[in-house]
Image (cartoon, rainbow, N blue to C red; front, side, top):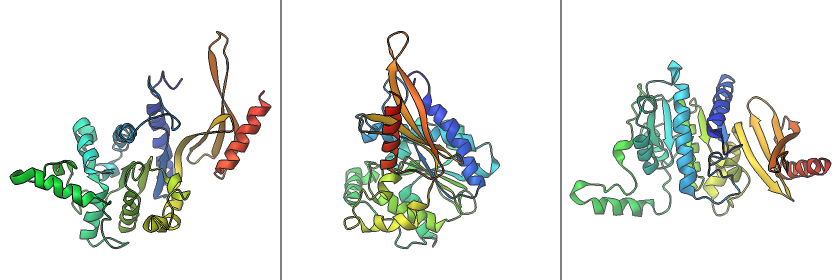
Length: 311
């Protein structure tokens, strides 16, 4: 089914009202998590082989098409919806590939540009300004050296793709759409994102596929990444999973964890059975509905029990 319909469009149709409901409830920290490569002739889930560039491109395109869905509301117009890219190159590509007026009405910027702007405005509530990833200064210096008299050679992206941030015009923002921070990129993205949110606390932050489960789940050891570890309890554990769809596979079963805010969580078993024409048929069975998000072990246990009972 996922190969024959525009499932990413369907995801946006579910995500937009879920975000609206969260905003109406005055939630400021919103998480969107889904398989961005699902659907089409080359459909892939988290268990398939793909590279970070493919994933980032899909998340960029998905968010570019989400942003105009907010622009019918005056509060999100005139650049007060910010598309925040993980780096300058992605910002440049986004602006080139989505050149229509309805896309360009948003403010195109990056985590670095926003963090620096807020620090320069004296709004950096967490202190210290932008945390640069290791090696970024080397690449920046090399790009400027290769540019010679023409200036920066643009190895890291074109600075002109950044929209100006002007206090009283498009700043403070009324909505931040943050595209894949940290996930497949530097962990400093997550650290800087917390700084941004502390500096502009009234702006809702919507993180699209930022792999927050990895951050909250201890994937990054605290003794290696102390700055990131410090953000977990005070920031990332406070995010509301507003649209969430993630596959789980273990012990011979396959299923999904699903939620659309403000509805409860659903654990869904995916079964493959012989169809009437001899081709396999996929069956989705909701095995439990919960108010609280279940743990990994609980999800697998539910799926195993449901699979055994269906035989």
